[in-house]
Length: 109
Image (cartoon, rainbow, N blue to C red; front, side, top):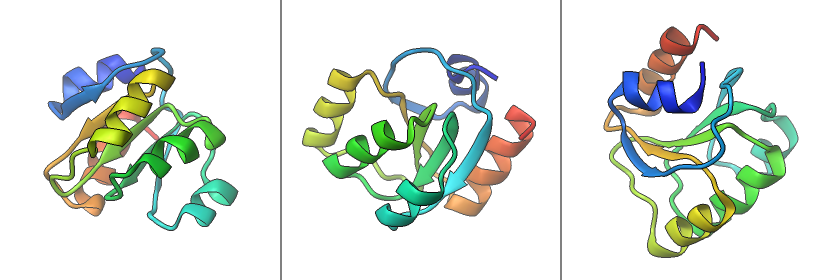
């Protein structure tokens, strides 16, 4: 499923948009070195981290989108950098587990 379609169907808050890529998998985590070494490209990365380092790691792993969970919103530096880099950043009120179930169901991953 394309990120734009996922954003529409999920009803999640849309903070930033970018290239409309296909979500091929999901990855949950907040420990950045684990994300860098284990997250697959084109994934929906679910996290509660909201600082500028998330944008840097997202480009390293080449994820399709970032889903901030538990009502987290990007801080100003993160939002500015994500817009500059053309990253999709969405926000969910659910915890990571519930959001991951929704990603899996909607994207068939």
